[in-house]
Length: 197
Image (cartoon, rainbow, N blue to C red; front, side):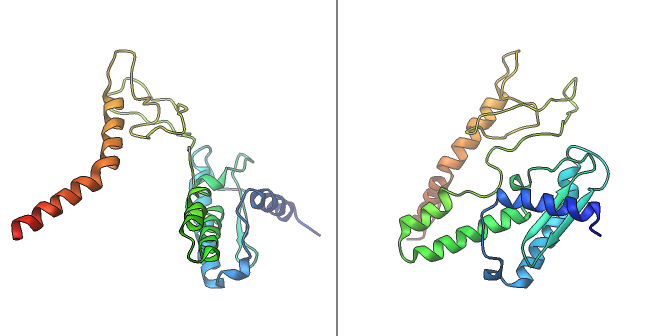
């Protein structure tokens, strides 16, 4: 007789696999798939703790077929594809690796494999609230645009009603650093070599 847990696991696995990049499980060594399943089973309880307490109702993974189930104690299935060290993340990375291999020496094709198919969260949902010692209340989660830089605590939208632009300045500094950081390092190395000559 099939148990309720087995039925729930099968349903969760089918739902989870439909959102993933599909790879042939046999194209990855079994030892690697076992490692991926260990990552998945370690990640599920941590992901569930963001919205509920208690151990997950379902936390299983089959390395033979790369199917998995993660159902939290509140009977909800989190969007596992938004997290690293999960089966969807590992299969997405492997799908990209196989895509690049299939491109051969075509660099544009290889770049499209990675750029057009990013893995992990592109715009993660902030579900936990955080408070700081300087804040008078707990910060609430906010939604942000897909082009924003996450640069503070949950609820820090980058500006406040009092006109404080600290969040915007921090975001601007991060964008400046990511844009010009390599140029600064290269200039420093060039100056160092110039001094040696």
